[in-house]
Structures are given as C-alpha cells and as structure tokens.
Image 1 (cartoon, rainbow, N blue to C red):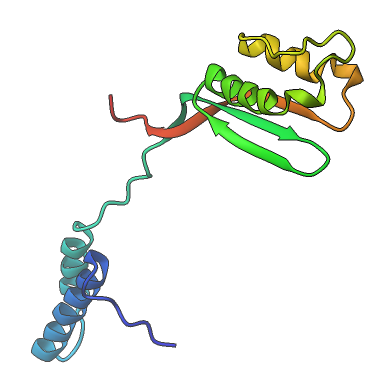
Image 2: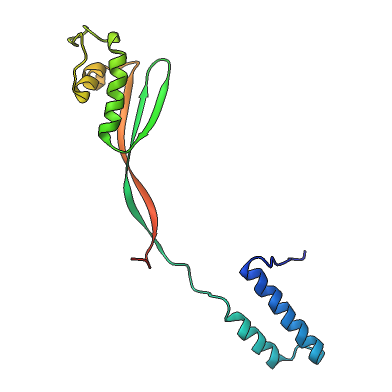
Length: 150
C-alpha cells in the first residue's frame, strides 16, 4: 500500500520536499551516499518539532443546574445557569397545575408568591411523593486549559 502525502498540509509538503531532495541526490551521484544523505535528513528533520504536547489541566469554568421533573405522562430535563432560574421555572409549572393539590393535606387554595414555598407546598415531603417529583442539582462545567498559557 502506497501512501500519498497531501501537499496541502505542512507535513505532506515536507515529505514531498524530502523526496525531491533525495531524487536530486540520486540523479547527481547515482546513489545515496551516506554523508550527503545524513546532511539532507538532518536539515529536513529540523523542520519538525518532536516536543511532547503541552499538558492541559482541568479548570472549573462555571456551574450548570439540571432540573429534572416528571409526572405520570412526561419527563422533562432542562439546563439552567443558576438555581434561582431553575426554581422559578419549576414554580411556574406548579402554579399552572396548582388545582391538582389545592386544599389537600393543608395545601393553600392559592399558590404562595415565593417560588421555593410554592414548590415545597406542591410536591410535599419527599417521602410522600408518588407520581410527581423533581430533582435539582448543580454540576461543575469543566474545560481543559493549556498550562503554558497564563
């Protein structure tokens, strides 16, 4: 199997240049004399860097909040930039479905104005939730950074 270097890449162009240098040496001397071949290869290899890649470190770039809400008919997962926004979205949902719980087990007939209070009243204690529930968790958003850069 022959490999065809791509002249559009720096590596491919370098391989093509080396082939031309070696062909010129062959045409001039009828062979590849060791000293001249070594000189050509030495100059050619200087075009490359054989340094190990720069190490990357994992850095915390922020935080994302994942809200998972489910009931008998659906499951929804949404991503939020902060806890307050996720909680406000969940509170909007419970307020539109408030009739499902209003007046039962001490739940007021009208939803509370405070988002956390509305969510807590709607869903009730964790050990009593059956068909409807939610989770809200924060996760670190990570990125890889170059340690050589400031």
